[in-house]
Length: 255
Image 1 (spheres, rainbow, N blue to C red):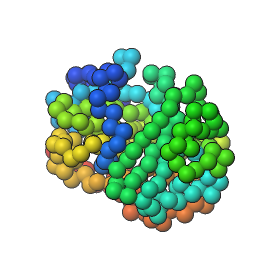
Image 2: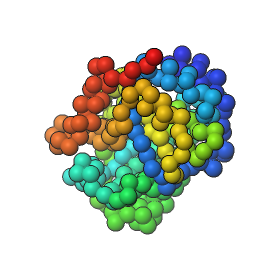
Image 3: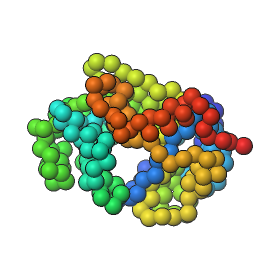
Image 4: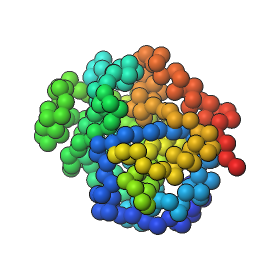
């Protein structure tokens, strides 16, 4: 991690306030997975093309996220079926900035992701007050149908394109936990390119150059698979094979 920090020190910074212009709450997402051991070369190659988010002197930020679902995991199953018009419901703590939000993410039938959120004083397993108002406004789901399922914790690097409205999030040190157990995924990086429309992307070009294929799954779904063995995940098998190959086989080619 120290080597990653040293490379990030060579990036120009961007502040949270400056990030407002690239919030991209309505966007398209493109995901990739690769090994953490590839990250150093990738970051070095694109550092002149992006700025890095810096929060209170930190260029790697910690995120703690609590996901909600129904008793029967209806939201997870909608993702497994690839159902258009599906939701993720979560509370997220941005550790370095000490901010908490309740968030509703909606995947449209055109493949766009729309995110709405409200500030919270703290994260709770119960959805109430402003969070419940947002849930009622943005979804057909009622708070009483939902329960806290699992935590997903990770470290994130956020890059912002110097020229175009694009963000790249790079997540590592992934950990899932609930009251019954936890799972840590070593050496895996989940990167996501977020754009309001297709723009020239040095990161996408980098992925293509190094033969890193598009594909991943949501961190929530991956957490369910790791912590709830009884839940079906047949349609995620190609993504799981990709992750396994990334972690244990020859996948990304860096030269």
